[in-house]
Structure formats: structure tokens, C-alpha cells
Image 1 (cartoon, rainbow, N blue to C red):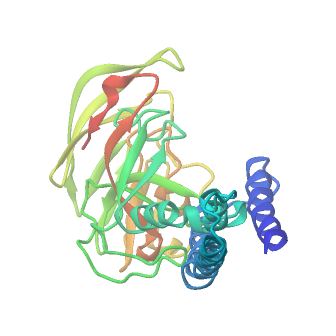
Image 2 (tube, rainbow, N blue to C red):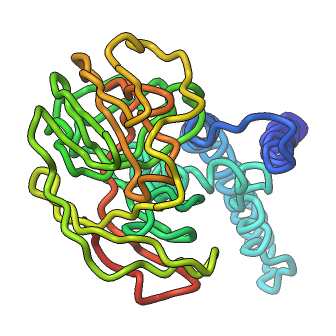
Image 3 (cartoon, rainbow, N blue to C red):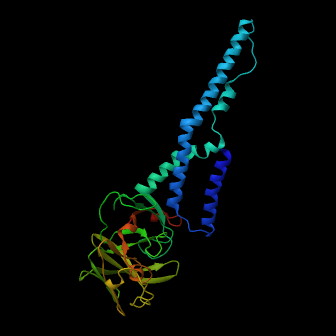
Length: 321
């Protein structure tokens, strides 16, 4: 067992290293599931087989010592060398290969349940959601609001509450589902979404957009036009870059591509059933549904709702719209 355990741990370490170096495309949900499964099997083996054997060996040692002391006492010898307490403790102690598997199972199980069914942490890697979310924000995503899903395969177990316009949602990027993206829900199934000349319209109704003070981007050292938008029951801010044209360059050939009409003014799309139209709040610097299409319900990960840390700016901690 020690050799087998060493090989298993080496396989996990090797996968993690290859993922970190970019040699393989990692899947943390799958890795955590396998870790939970493997350590769980060791935990069961420890409780049902290895621990009872160690306890039996300790009991036999203690019985043997008591028997020896009794025999010596019958001969009138009361001073006996050899204390078995330390030896008994060594017999009961978990070996290293169980300590690194069965011993970690409760912690790994707690992380697995928390991450898979309740809340999952994410880090914002890009500026597509500025000014709502900044690069480096560490956020929490609610995994049950939109329905509980099985980890890894993402099969829905409960319906939950359907996503609403204005929600900030994490989802699996349709062209490459191994990647997680975060955008704002702009269109729900059945909606007609139009983004023409940098103005958003949903089902023929212009979305409220009021100018506010310009936003200063510390990374680019530039000011951008900032507006307050009301989408559904969400009041949030968006950015527009006047130097960017209204037309959508580099559009991919995605599923339901025929539901969209592109022009020099922008795009108009009819959202199919079971799908959502997503856009970033940094409207002219966001790779979103305008470029790669609709997000199917099966790709939904959860609803983003809280910034729990930004090491560069602690004032960022808190909820957001």
C-alpha cells in the first residue's frame, strides 16, 4: 500500500505540475472529485480494515504484557522493565500513506461540497466587466440560485430561479467549455436584443442609460465615458470607448448564428429557448455574445454576487450589482 499510495500522490502532483506549466489543460472540478473519491476510499479502508487491525495488535501487545507481568508476579517479581504504552501508541498511529489520504478526506470532502453545491471562488482575470469588477477582484459565485448541478458533468438536479436580465453570471465559455467566463445577462430566452450605435435595446425598449462622471482606468491611464444603466431590477455602471467603432469585428460561426443580424451599426439577436445573451459592462472591450453567440443553460456555473478580496484595494470588498 505505501508504494501504491506514493504512485497515486505522484500522479496528482504530476497532473498539477503539468497544469501549472501549461502542458495539459486542467480541470479543477474533476481533480477535486477524484481527490474526494480516492481519499474517501482510503478513509473507508482505514475505518473498516486498517484501524481495527492496529487496535487488535495493540490489544494483543497489552494482553501479552499483562500476561508476562502476571507470570513474573507469581514468582515474586514485582519490578518489571519494559513499558508498553509507547509501543502501543506507535502501533495505533496512522502510517504516512494513510495520514496523507484518509487523514485529508474530511477537509477535501468539505471543500468539494462547498465548492460544488454552495459557493465557488473566482478571480477576475480581465477588464471586460469594468467598472463593476476590476482585474484582481476575488469573487464568490452562488452555485444553487440557478439550480443545483452535479459537479464535473454539470447536470441540473433542481430548477432553481432562472437567470434574470442584469444578473452577473459565471458560465462555461461555449467555444471552449473548460474555460469559465463572467458577463452580465442582457437577454433571456425569447428576448430580442439590439446593440446599435452603442445603445442597448431589449424587445424594442431602450435600456435606461444616464451619463455619469468619466471613469479613470489606472492600467491604461485613460479616461472612458461612464454611464449608469438600469437593466431589469439591476442598476449598474458601464463604459464606452469612443475610439472603438460600433460594428462587431471577427464574429465567429456559432450555433443559432441565423438568429443574429450584423451591420455597421452593431447587432440584433433573437435569443433562442434555453439560451442567454451575455455582455460585459466594459462594452467596447468585452469578448461576449456579440462575437461568439449564446450561452446554453447547461453551461451556467452560478450567480456572482460578492467581492471577498482584492489584495491591491481592500475597499473593493463587498456586494455588487
